[in-house]
Structures are given as C-alpha cells and as structure tokens.
Image (cartoon, rainbow, N blue to C red; front, side):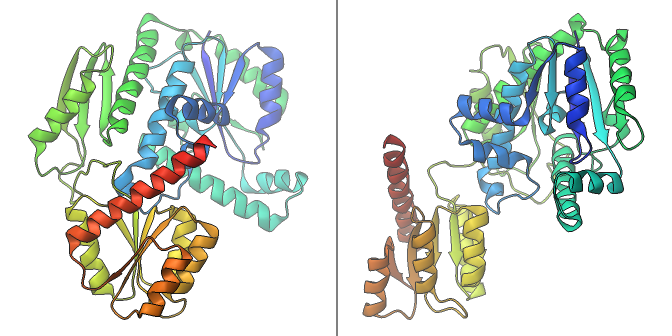
Length: 408
C-alpha cells in the first residue's frame, strides 16, 4: 500500500479530513511530534533542539554549529526508518523530506484562503488579530522549511504534490473520496525501484548523521551503496576536507564507494567550517565596535564561532533567542551596564559562563562581578591565546555542570 503524506497550513480544517481518512482506511499516522521524539531518542539531542529545525528563525551561531542541519539530519533518519512500514500517513513538515524518487507516496496538500483560515481560527477561540499573526508566522516557517529542503519558496506550489485539497472550496466527503480514488492508482503503487529508493533514503540519512556527528554539513546522495558528497562552500584545503569526509562515510554500514564533488554554491564567498564541539558558542558584548569586530575575527581564525552585541539590551535578547554558552562582557556600556547584564544572566540563565573583559574596571567591580558568578575577570588588552584558553575552560565548566544536572 502507498504511503500518504499530508502537508497543511494552520486553520485549514486538516483534522476532520484526517479523521475521515482514518475511518475509511486502516493506516497508522505519524506526526512531526512523534518523529521529533524518535529523532531525540536516537540522537540524544533534546526535543526542543530538534524542533528548532522547523523554525524560520535561525540562531546567529548556526553558521558555526550547524545545529539546524544536525537536527534535520536526525529528523530525516527517524523518518526514513519509519517509511519501511506499510499503510502509513506522514503528517506535517517532515513529510517534505521524502525524496521524489520514492514514488509509492501520495503527496497531499491541504490549504484554504485567508478568510476561511481566520474564520476557522475564530472557531477555536482566537481573535482576528491572533489568527492573522499565527497564520503568518506558521506560513513563514513552512516557506523557510520548504526552501531549505526543496529550494522552492512557495510551500503551496502544486508541483510539490499529487493532490491539492482546498478545504474552503471542497466539502469533507468530496475531499476524502478524491483521496481514496487516488490511492488505487497504479502510479503510486510500490515498485522495486521505489522500494530501493526508500532504502537509499535510509543510507543517505545515516551518512548525513555520521557527518553531522563530526561537525560536518555537506550535500549527500546515496544510490545502491554509492555515496556522492557535494561541498557547497569554499574550502581553503579542499583535498584535506575530501579525505576527512571520505574517511567518515566509508565507515557507515552499507556504503560501497564515496565520491566528492564541488556543489553549485562552492564559489560563493562563504568559507566551509567544520564545527568543533569542544569550542563554545561565544557572545561578545562591547560597545567599541572596531574592537569587538576585530576580536571576533581573531577568534574565528582559531575556529571559534562568535556573535556580537553592541549593548546590554541586545545581549539579553540574544541570550533568550540564540542560547550562547559563554559571554565575553564589557562593563562600561550605554544603557544597561555590564554588571547589570551579568546579574540578569546569572538570575535567568546561570549555566552561561561570563568572562568580564574591561579596560576601565576597578577592584571593587572585580569583586562584585566574581561574587555575582563571573567565570573570570580580565583587563584589556588581553592576549588572544590566553583568552582562547579561558574560553575553553569556561566551556569545560559549563559541560561538567550540564552533565552533573543530567545525573541528578
């Protein structure tokens, strides 16, 4: 029996369509939440981290950490393994990950116009303002996700689906009857080629996960055990990276050969960076723009990814949104000063280690900062090697505290 995938906008009356389908055919249903739960279980990553893959908002640290790509790799592997089952409905954003080569899939999109969706939201107790905000936010996430996966900006593009169900124009019985009629089509029956494509999908996912575990993010395609890796960012030492990637992939069970190639985006300005899990996500907070930008560049040379905030308010917003692990914080800044930022960080996110780096602090400031929980108190100028070592020690302390908390 074919697999059914359902991708829908919010407030499009998807639930009654699903319930009616389930009455008519005895299929198991798998949702994004279940796939996230499975991905979390096999990866060890928290579910909330896995879930961020579906969000259009990307952390400022992602270009160093590849967290979104790693989460997507685990989601893809969880989904690929589930596709080995028959009589399955895959409902949600993750359904877009199933390759077109797997042809025994009936791909359905449920959508409606804005007026209909607002009315449906109001039936669920939402105000019109809330409804519009939720619809726009949800559609933005779906657009971003589809663009990342399929390089298509329109998540409702008819070419992505076998069937569009416009719930504002089609009644429930008609929609379900249409789905039933398509399920009997010869076009979506499982063939040997389609089953083989499903196995290739599993191997592709396993290779992506193996690379993600080592901090790499490249394009992967597997076919009959032959794996092709596409490097989509410029690399300073290409042959060394190719050797490293091949060494990782060759160990994956089922891989018979590995080939590397330069992808379409290779000649863009971005430099490929492997993520070193030993280095912290660093937030630099200083209103001296030239100084902090230079410091960020010097850390980058040492393969330490960092983000920059020029005032305390911005830093506190980034703590909530981007979850840095270590902060390098100046004391004298306009608005909220460094001591107040430190105080707020330790009250709300005590696991973040804070290194004070100032050119104007006093002994009294040092005592206040250390009493508030600062990891170190340093004076400008500071030798970059010493600062790098301090950052690594701060990361180590944070990791030990995290492990201790897990064990409790």
